[in-house]
Amino acid sequence: MISYTGKFSIYFVLELGRVFIFAGQSLYYFFGQRSPLSQLLFAIREVGLRCVLIVSIVGLFTGLVMGLQLYYTLVKFGAQSALGTAVALSLIRELGPVLTALMVVGQAGSALASELGIQRNDEQIDALSSMGIRPLGYLIGPRLLAGLICFPILTTFFDLIGIFGGYITGSLLLNVDAGVYWHRVYTSVQLADVLGGYLKAIVFGFICMTICLYYGYYTHLKSELRGVRGVSQTATRAVVCSSICVLAADYLITSFLI
Image 1 (cartoon, one colour):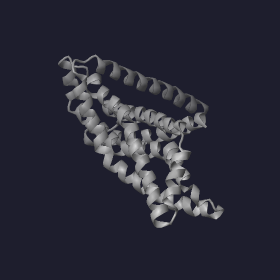
Image 2 (cartoon, one colour):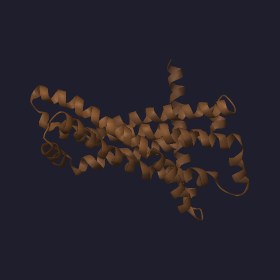
Image 3 (cartoon, helix red, strand yellow):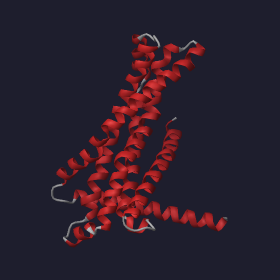
Image 4 (tube, one colour):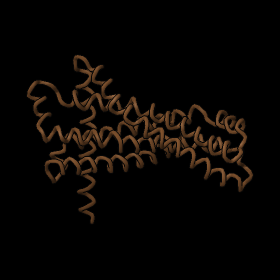
């Protein structure tokens, strides 16, 4: 048991170092290219726009459910007027960044891992290297930077739509005064809450994009299978690993912020 734990710890530290080197080299080579802006804009469309709809839908229903559940909890204490505070702070501090990250991983992260895996199996990445193009800067760098840009924006969408969903449930369905709801939202949310949510979004964006891109880029090393089944296996592992790391990072960041 002790030897197994030691081997796992060494493997984890080595793998963590490889991932950070992978991310650092990708960003370094990306900024060293001739025309990085066009690649970045394409990556933003690929990572960000593809996830706007799913993030908006999940944010709306999360706000609707939170408004319903929190109302029936607060009404037991005669504090239903605090519904706006509870919904806004729960979304901005916690649920917004976490659920946004999980949705983006499922929507865009898995697609990026699969795409890179197919390119690796088809030797397209090797072809780029033979033409003198750095694959890390051309394929990985713009997508990683796009994740850092898009995650806070998508989190903002989620938070705003979720707060509106709480208003629909609380004010339109359960007769909480609309003025009281929005006044509580306005007075309870502080700048530190918003910045904490954005900090989580940036960290989650780095984690999710780096892991998904890392697994896709090294499909031939991370999968015991070959061909399409190997790509499917690495994409699944990338999504699972990213989701676990997001939840672990959320706990660590929250413990420091509180």
